[in-house]
Image (tube, rainbow, N blue to C red):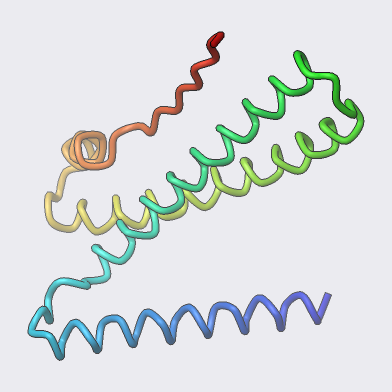
Length: 135
């Protein structure tokens, strides 16, 4: 357990260093106010949603493969189980960052209902569609 914790802490340190370098470079280019804490949270949230979309696409592909293609069903089930765990983690991470963005907006707006409305307009819901057709 200690190895995992050290590895995770090391990853967080690297990400934080990259974030600091990004802000520093933006300041050097004259865009000092571009990478605000709110903007960084929004960027993370957008990437979380994009990753979740990729996971959902992969899940749909695996389910299609399992139903329609002669493949190793056991292997597909194992992959689907792992993917389900990744999707749950993506949901948790997205929720954490949505709350952080919500707090930033709430400070500006001052009203929780208006904040939720603004979040809905600003971030929207991610949609994934899979088209399966015959050639």
